[in-house]
Structure formats: structure tokens, C-alpha cells
Image (cartoon, rainbow, N blue to C red; front, side):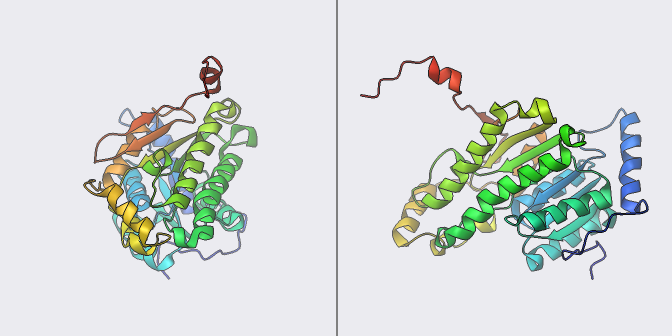
Length: 305
């Protein structure tokens, strides 16, 4: 068994003593609060879904580079994730990494991942709902992973971090894609899930949720990125006609690096407002997309003829 405490849905047991990793994070928080060199992530604990590879892995690594106390990586593909998680453990320390094999569309498995994070590190400060798939041929699994995963991760995040639930507040980032704001004719079902993520996130920001809970939820939508998601897309489109349309859509586009996506997210963690939606593409800085609000629509006369 890997030394970074690989967990396979082990039964959660309420701790009776302070674990070494919990003590480490508590001590780090105390030290960081007194340091004038403190970064925004020092002493923090994050949960990153889909963190075994691609954008999720890049985010987890960037968090640790920025001084984060610990990261729990949640991924359903143990074989893919194990090697990368061990790399993080070797580079940043075994006590800073916890891996949980879980299906983000399964609330019980995700709750266990959150419980184990609190068990080891005493708290959760940031949740990155990043896990997602792009496969219109297996659309039921796609909807469950992309939509259910975002909803489950957000609701559990509220349960564990909200001040109204004895938490200390925090940040939830729902990761979609540029297709969250710009539909893809080649992937209509994937488009639906991405629009759902953006709409769900934006709606949470339009309410008084942040005032009640102290938990900020915002959306992060990477453009075309060099990950497994874009490999062999012809096999995951509904048919060859849809695959051709998607290829025409992306011809001439530049694939950005996952590392650029990760750095961009760190840069806006504090700046982003509740419910805001941000796009990052072409290895440049993220920018915010503005959605109309109800008041704006009410104040405008719209001619539907």
C-alpha cells in the first residue's frame, strides 16, 4: 500500500487523538498567521475532485506550491491517479496528500471523502469540483458525473464549511469549460451539462447564500486544454457527423497547458465574487463573463415580435 495513506472507502471512525497531519496543519495555521510573508493559501486545506490527472492534478500541485497545508485528491480512476498522487507525495510530503477513490456522482462516497479529510486535517477550506467527462455516447454517465458531481460537491461543501453549520466559511469552485458559455454543435449533451454547471453556480451567487454561510461559490471555465478529455473525440461524439462538426469548431484553436489553468485559478481565488463565472484560455489570465440579472431584464422593454 502506498505510503500516502491510500483509502478505499474505509469505514470512517471518529478520531480519539490528534493525528500527525491534523497537528501539522494546525501548527502551520498558527505560524502563517504571524508571518508577513503569508500567501493566501498557506495553512489551507483543499479537496480537488478529478485530481488524479489533467487540470485537477495541475490545480492540486499549484496549491501545494503556493504553500497549502494539505490536499485531498478525489478520483474514480485509481490506476490513473496513483502514480501522480505519489509524485505529489514525494515532492511535497506524504502528510500533505490524501487520496480518496470515489465517484463524484455518489453522495455517500463523496461524504466519506469529506469526512476523511476532516479526520486527517481538521478542516476543509476550499473545494474544487473539477471532475468531469466529455462523452456524448455515454450521456447518462456524463450527466451524472458533470451535473450530479457539481451539485453533490457543492451541497457537501456547504454542509462542511458553512458558518451556519458550525464551519468557518470557504470557497467552492465549480469547474466547467468554455462550452459552459458557448455551445458546441459537436457535443450537444456535454453542452447541456456545462450550461447547467454555469447556471447552477451563477444562481447561487445571485442569492443571499454567501451572507448566510460565508461560503463563496464561483465558476471557472477553461478553454481548450491539453488533457485526455480532447483525445480521440471522434469516439465519444454521437456519430461521425457530430464529430466532424466538433473538429470544424476547434480547427485553428490553441491548446493551453493545464498548468496555466491552475495558475490562473490561484490568481482569482480572492478576487472572484460569489456566483461569478470566469474563462481562462490561450495560456492567458482569466477574465469574467457577465450574465444579465433579473433587475436588468425587468427594466428593459423586449420586443418578441
